[in-house]
Length: 619
Image (cartoon, rainbow, N blue to C red; front, side):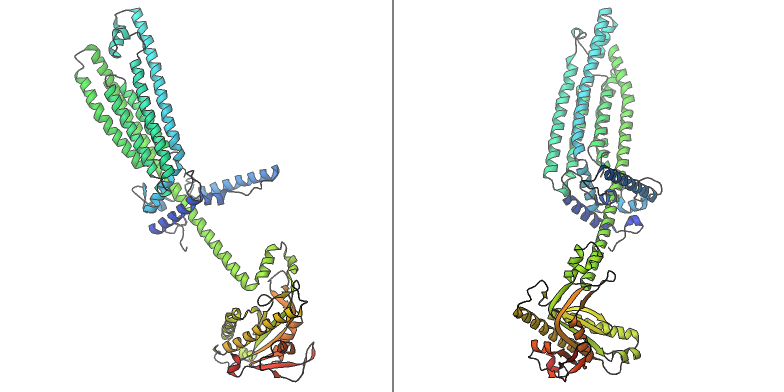
């Protein structure tokens, strides 16, 4: 386990509370999203936060000086990140999960998350993180076993040399008797290399090799076949292999070599080695390690106590047997408590390490949760900004803005349009109403009136240009309708005439619709007479573009704009005032010919009225 690394709502690490159900949902979503985006290398839970906090953008083609700057920047970011975590934890280190927050989401003394989904995500993540460590643990076991074989060979070599010397010094003496009785050898084996001891360790090594090889294969199959949400089953396979190895070692030594007085030392070394590897190279949880510790302890004492007791009872029958019994008992009384103590220390370390792993997991989930909140907020703001821009500027201008590096280049976005039908509409009597009605009511009236106009724009391919006071300006043929720009082939009169007719027809229909809808808008109290709508329309060429670099506005310029404005100023309430150009394009309307009038900047002009006082004309 030592190798484990691994909206509304407020984050618990910020002091607010997350319910267990909500937190479970967050972890499940984070686990699913992050795991699907990562490779099958066991590194799949929320790492977006660490990327966001610790990653710097270094250009691949940057020079050595820029790379050094990037490295320094990374160092500063890492130091600031560590400092922030350290100070945020009250000087307790980089553990940023407060104890109260951790207790809020765990139970069983911090050994299990309250939400089943959270616990499952943690276990699966832990199993994937320790995937490669398990292979290393099996290989390390084989190394330890080989070490024991070599150690036993070295010990047997020393024993053979020692006994040979004793026989040479005093044949049939105490030294030779010591070698025969303490090592349970026949007289002719005293001076020889006793292969029976080596063969015992070789057989154990072969069996343990089979255990480890089988464990490696099962572990590979588990991670290959199991879905991501079931990866923790691989940890149970590892636990089962280690438990089987522990039982095999205990039974083999206590049954096969119980007469050998050194077996307490051998079992002590085997238990410490196996428990240590299991703790640091398997990813097993504390409760699993407890089960292995208790099961191994029960088996150890259940088999060893009868053996030691039996040897102690028969100690008086033979002198050398008494010595062996004494040596075995002394070693057992020393090694058995030491075995328990060392395993208990390892078990306690397992508990501490699991607490740290769970805190790190919880911290990553909280960071990922905060990242997602930030991303959602950014997306919301981005969407809002996009909608706002789309309502302020036409799509063609927005696309041009994306290509402009400097706002001073906005003049390049200007375009000339032909056959554009422009409408000016204002409220007759608005000045009088403004002086007698409260400003808030006047604003509310205008907002409701123009809101009804906006709602019918799309029905008639009309683009709203702007509103100035009580004046509503719209156009067909600039952004919507039949668009004829300077880049288009406007030399063909038929195409231009067709586009102008379409745009003008749409604008007149829109003007009728606005007058019809204006009658449904409630007049503010105190206004006296209901304000009437006055409309002026003209069709002709104009320029469009962005003016200035601050408070950007999409504006129309040209003679057509001025003429339409004059038509509105010279018009009558509840009437559409147009020029001869409009009448020529849409002759089918019941136009009323007016006497020629003086128009500022245009001289004498022939104009026409389309009265809408008759409801039938509004259709």
